Image (cartoon, rainbow, N blue to C red; front, side):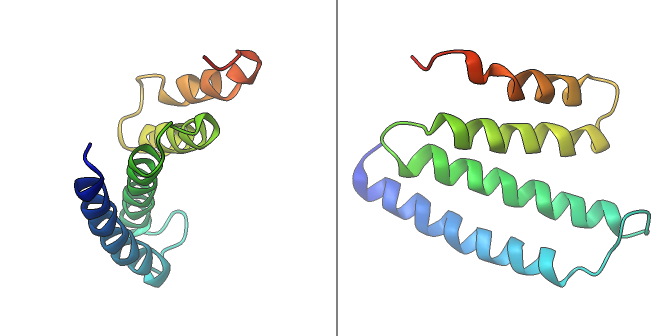
Length: 102
């Protein structure tokens, strides 16, 4: 990606991230409440934006950041699409620290 386009993407993501994070922090929902899934959707969006930032901002993807964001995204996504083993996949991802980086 050209540097100018990368900067533009990161600016847009930063702006979107600020809005999503603000909405998340202002949402008073607690686990089990009727608005809980809306708050979890905001958290999922927040993590997706972090994933974009980590993927675009650095010349090489930081393996640990990528794993952390993917783990969290998979774990939260399990709440929305259960029965597909997303949490189990997240757990497998968490134990690949012993695999050397390429």
